Length: 105
Image (cartoon, rainbow, N blue to C red; front, side, top):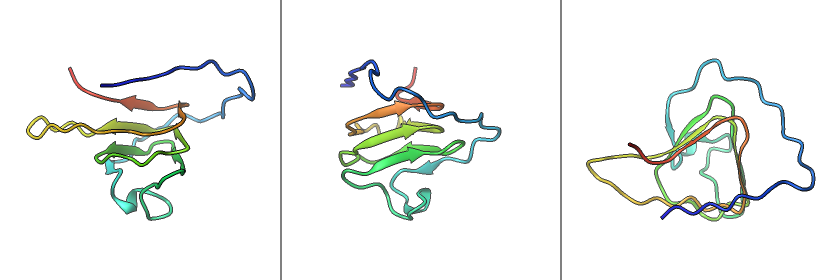
């Protein structure tokens, strides 16, 4: 089940200006510490930014994040031979200048 609640921004609504990505990076897994600047997968209450040109594949359930900003690409792992349900937990998700890809045709 996929549930989204969309809210209109009423305060502090100016979006960060992000340049276009000229070359998307190779896919890296959310669970891989090397995918992240701090060399650790995001934890409970973290504010996470998927940077411009980053190409992150969600391959594990996340803890509850305080905020997730997508400036690059975040896609859910889509393995047709071993389908699994993944949960992205966040109090706020802002797809600023990127893509959030879930599912397939």
